[in-house]
Image (cartoon, rainbow, N blue to C red; front, side, top):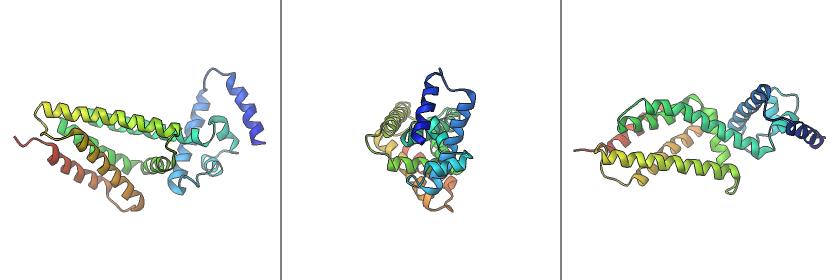
Amino acid sequence: MLMQAKNSTAKQKERRTGPSFTETGRRAQIVAAAIEVIAEAGYHRASFAKIAERAGLSSTGMISYHFDGRDDLMREVVTDVMRLAEGYLRPRIEAHESYAARLRASIEGNLDLFAEYPNHLAAIVEILANLRGGDPGMVAFLDTTEANLAVQVEQLRTAQRTGEFRDFDPWVMMRAIRAAIDDVVRRATHDPGLDVRAAGRELADLFDRATRSTS
């Protein structure tokens, strides 16, 4: 029955040139519900039935109408979280001129983001831990992550050329920063009492000392 409903609605979708305002809102509603369910129940227990119930939908067929299966929904969740992070972090970083202040804003901002949107970060950790290596969602995420990392590495190099940062391997430093942030996020998912904002300040202080030129 669900397969028949999906085929019927798929034909209706094909006749349209793009999603309507209502459809866009419904997709966002489903993604928001999926984020909450994944964060609370885990990736494998986040069934369409639970997501539909959280979204207030009458049936799972509404999810199948808007997404081509579970993987498609999971990819949209990852995209939504990445979009949120970009919008949250970029203004904070670009509000500063010095490279040291931008680095601090990036480190503290990542963990402030987690403090304000714990479900989003918990959901993406769950998804990425369970996506297969060849899954298009994982490939796209890793490509985006590596591209962002390359930009950040180049910024460290620029700061070194200006004399603001000392001499070090930018790739090693940036990966150390990223690993430290990710470790706090992983710990926080198992320790709700952890003060992630304080951890962000500690990391920012640590890497400020590790990168800043002493001359």
